[in-house]
Image (cartoon, rainbow, N blue to C red; front, side, top):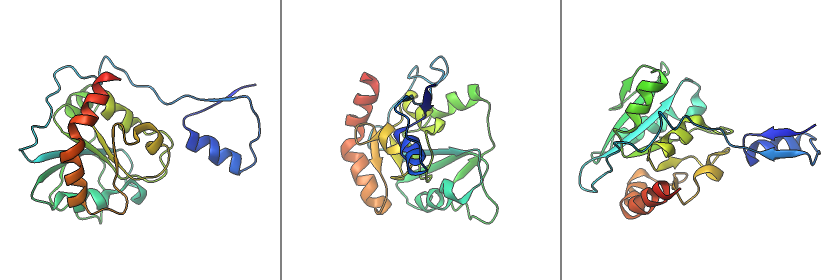
Length: 184
């Protein structure tokens, strides 16, 4: 009698395939804030290397592993990844850790400065919600439900930008994003 969608992105996709009911709501995924929270979070000082974090259970190419690897080649960042890295994609300088239980992963988020989510067409990525709940601004592919979750208030789209210009944006907007995350 009533349909719940994870994001407006999902709703619009269903409409494109003929869904027409007015009995629907959009409710984003939740996060266990007993685990994913700001307790003990230390933020980037703007002088140290930017610690970039990503995670994905899937090895699917649309998850953006190649972009994560490209970002790792910049001298002004340290790049970390938790999850399953696909064979055939050079890790470059990414420090890769195997998948973790939620308790471990929640602790892991607090070690980093920003979350990089270059995945395409994620409806409502749990990793993005976990990152925000843990105090990390999000750099994301302008695709799927991620833009409506993050927008410009909590991070920035990385599409069509070289990472040096993204880093310059992070340097300018980091405190703004962190303030918004802490307020909300």
